[in-house]
Image 1 (cartoon, rainbow, N blue to C red):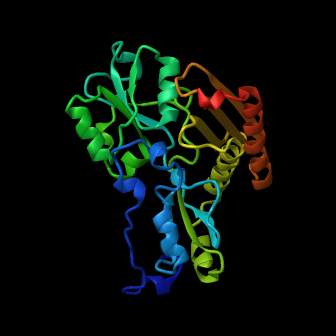
Image 2 (cartoon, rainbow, N blue to C red):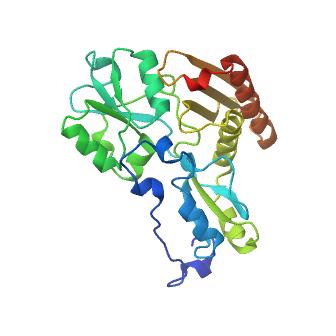
Length: 286
């Protein structure tokens, strides 16, 4: 609206809230329902059908392959990418007594937790919105949980955070904290609007991380983490990780290169290829 006065007029923008399969089915793990696209499919269909003009996604939920006839040219400035630790009884993962139950639906979080703290137990089917998860915590179903700090900040619910995990302790999910906006590929008007919203530094980082993920063909059954950031020299530092779901094996790699689209895509792909070859066949099915 700030860049395009015609959008500031009464009724120029209408927000349509669309519930997706991932929002509705909370009783089973995402991988059992059908993996990727669960939080995007209904929104993408509305976009392709012309019911909406732009589609706003959490980039963490967007499959590496976009639907035909759509483009995703815009990322908003990235929120904090770190994970938050929440517990009523402990200040950090290290403070939890042996045998404590940590609730998380994320295999990425589960594998990294168990790799560092094998004496903890992880409750995997810990799903629902933030409020639901906090209620389960207060009811004692679990002793702790991890949530993306970005979501808590956007919901103004950071008062629940016990501590924030460093990137070294918990590498984030690919595209964590990033919002993406898609439009139809033949809609020049919307692409022009979105160009004024795009934060290029975030778009490049997300593209690098997604190139890594695409190379690994990450499914919801595969613990994968990746994070691209600008270092103090202005270059791109990419860090990638794959793990066995039980956390017994964790493979990590990193790349440094110029903060430019082509170079960053290459870094992501290259890191993915390295981890694939180091993991070997059968690694992801453990």
